[in-house]
Length: 133
Length: 352
Image (cartoon, rainbow over all chains, first blue to last red; front, side):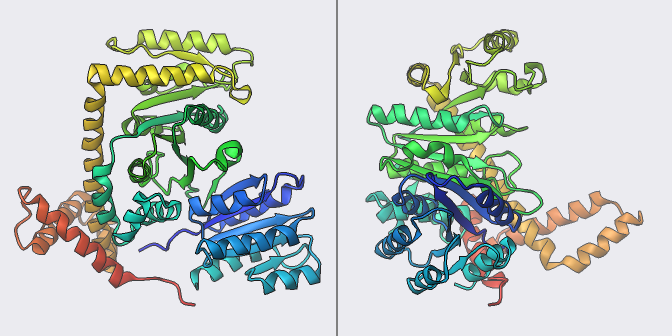
């Protein structure tokens, strides 16, 4: 029996003009066999509604502008409230070490910053963490 | 089943989980579909298809906004192709539906075709029914029309909308004749571009050249979806078509044909699964036989006939009766056991 497909919500803020990297991530995830639901959110609330409807295994958010320390805690809180704590959350973007450790503390599965590892690592990480849930 | 009750009580989470369950053919999927079937039949199903870039997603977004303005609730299934090489998919239709994405009255689900040759995911029809059972007034199916897709969507929907755009290089002549026969409403989107009127004329001509005249004359509507132009007219036409279906009795006729096609699909799929498991259980022997055939020591037709006989006997053994077309109830009961058995045998292939 074939293995279940992994569905990932890959999203970034509408306000954030940086999109090329996210599109590249989408490509790599797709090439790794995942179903990638790509969206741009106007407010962070949209992300959780989308994740709920699409019944995703993972949420991958990209931050090249500010907002990460304001938005991610909200996402983690909502996932908890909606009984969706088994959804893996990974964050990518221009974050410093302090932000990275705070995010990991609040339950984010992995944080990826430029220059550390490759986009393929993101794909491998999602696959292994989702399959071993 | 708890999930079904929860869904019927309005839980979005249950609705989403049920769609996943049937999409992945998880244990219980058959029972879920059996359970919800009596709640279906109320939603009006709109199929939206056409070449990539014609503006289907934008159109779906605008049609939905208009339906919401009229206080109807909407379910949307957006289908995109699965890569035949990697098995992955980029499901990007939601991007163009940002406006309706946070409307509580709208449920959007992206689906990958997962190898289905017809372009519509195998589970699309099931997901449509679940949205219907949930209580959605309208269910929109949006998919790229490539090859046989168009025909698929026509079977799945009450009304089929074909979306095209001027200058796309698609010569109408080059398009499959089938589309012209089965579209209920034609939309020339991006009508502000050069060649819009010419495309309308071409479509008109093709429709006139088509086969026997139908009671419904398919309208051709020019729209500029991004500017919401003529969307209200399009929705009016959907309404007119719906009235026509009811008055002419065509709704029941089409739905009966849909049921017939669905049953065929389900039966084909279930028999194919027997075949798949038979081959995988006997991989080495099968491979040897392939070598023989390659060497012309035997022919493929013999092998195929043998396989069919084995499958027949296998099904017969499970029902403890010979493979008799007069025992369909038993046949399906055992499919559930068989699915459960398959799951137990094969389980998960990952080690953590």
